[in-house]
Length: 309
Image (tube, rainbow, N blue to C red; front, side, top):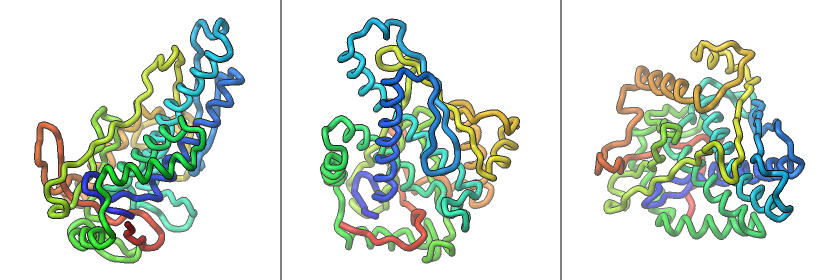
């Protein structure tokens, strides 16, 4: 965990996993696009099954091999960023309803902690950039270093001071399973607005948060491709989700349609439990620009994490 003046707390584990999800999905999409597949099924970490329906451009058969390869590289990265972002929001939704990656302890404690979605989205963005370079891992290392500097990453001493500022205000407790979360950030980018990081007041007092735009997949997309993503959950928590959606469990989750409904329900549940202040940062410096400065809570890990330079 690091603290940055413009991005608040950044969870490096979340960031790198998001980047690697993007790289994995891009590799899968590229392979299937080269084989002109129209239906693709895949999984990431959670058991849920993702299904992509693809439509190729009408003139696809007329294009030269080099043109096809160039288009596949571009469109597979764009699609992968969109699908990876969707899968990461889906992970937060699942954990809110009690899903556990290890199958032992529910992870609701850490669902939608204020640094998670920003760290995830930053990873998706950097992953997409790294995929355009010859060596993905090396590119990720260089991009991460460069980006943290641009966000004005702070020494560990400052990060620890930022943590002390939020103890008792944004979370209580120490060891993961005994944490009482007092703040959560439900901004995901699915409403068309950027995700704005929550900054700790009085740490880098003159800093303005650096918002990030969530990847969107307009249809048709680059080169005339069309893609439609559906999620088929198999986790036990799906029954709670389907009841909220009033949807038959045999039907897929369609993110663009169903995520806003689920996110609104989750937000309302948290407001009922902890009050409206639990879902907002401390204050807004500029309501028109939505440049909000607040704090973050302890993120989701099975052991306390160290703040690092």
